[in-house]
Amino acid sequence: MIILKTVAFFDAKAYDRDSFSRFSDENISIRFFENKLNEDTVSMAACCDAVCAFVNDTINGEVIEKLSSYGVGVIAMRCAGYNNVDLKAAAGRIKVLRVPAYSPYAVAEHAMGLILTLNRKLHRAYIRTRDHNFSLEGLTGFDLRGKAVGIIGTGKIGRCFADVCKGFGMEIIGFDPYKSSEFCGKYVSLDGLLEKSDIISLHCPLTKENHHLINRETISKMKDGAYIINTSRGLLIDTAALTEGLKSGKIGAAGLDVYEEETALFFEDYSDEIIPDDTLSTIISMPNVIVTSHQAFLTREALDGIAGTTMENLRAYFAGDELKNEITL
Ligand code: NAI
Image (cartoon, rainbow, N blue to C red; front, side):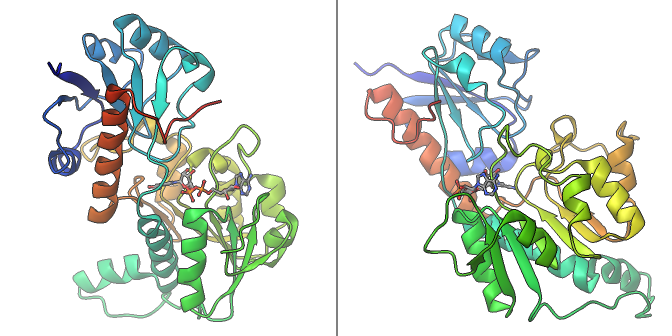
């Protein structure tokens, strides 16, 4: 007899319900909760066999302790990054699974979208022409062809992004402690990349070692007017240092899909409120900054990839099969 397994699905949005409905399994019942998973909401997972979580859920020691006491045996992350999971606390108690790859194109294309928008001021042109203002003052950009793009992290997404940049005729340089023969650019040191790049794009995971990789010191080594694009993780950038760089003109523009304090804000609608984050309010007000709310992954293809692999991960766990996508310490 097959016993129905129950999954507590946190931070659920309409697009999640939609994509997961296409990969449903008659032996797995999903309870969708709109709340993010954290110390206050973890009790919603009581009586469930598994938890499905996302990038802005808080999966710390306390949450893991409680999940374990409820008998939850597995956390299925429906994302690639897992910096928000306390793996030490989970070790030996709860399995942690993830989706290592799902359309790297989605994130790479979004990073290029941020560059094109910032450089050609499309965000400003859109507002202007809607107001019947057809002036071109202040909208001058530069050709991407021949400009140096520095890619920090040349894994799946970084390499895709490099291929996109190649199509624009850019000079591609990269920094990664692990070099890939599939990277279409030239590897340089981190300092070499900072000094040479007209545009710097972050595509490495967040680790203890690279917290605030972009800080006052690294910014001081950049070319004047360099662009910074971050579609990776917010804590890779010291936002206070970035703000200083933007104010002084050292940084020419910033395209941020992630933000170090995003957990409390991103994925929710606060349009009727004054947000309590002055740093974010300041950078959002700058004409040469675009903030998107961690949406780089959000394509139909990526959502289907996420749902398919997450359900496959859960099926394998419940069946006692080999866990190809388990994260271990
Ligand atoms: P990947 O694992 O294929 O590649 C990451 C690369 O970064 C590896 O080659 C690794 O050696 C390198 N790396 C690690 N530490 C580094 C450092 N300190 N400096 C330079 N390189 C370093 O990962 P993938 O799939 O390319 O994803 C990259 C990151 O993109 C994820 O970790 C995640 O944080 C972010 N991401 C963001 C999404 C979004 O919607 N904004 C969606 C998916 C991923």
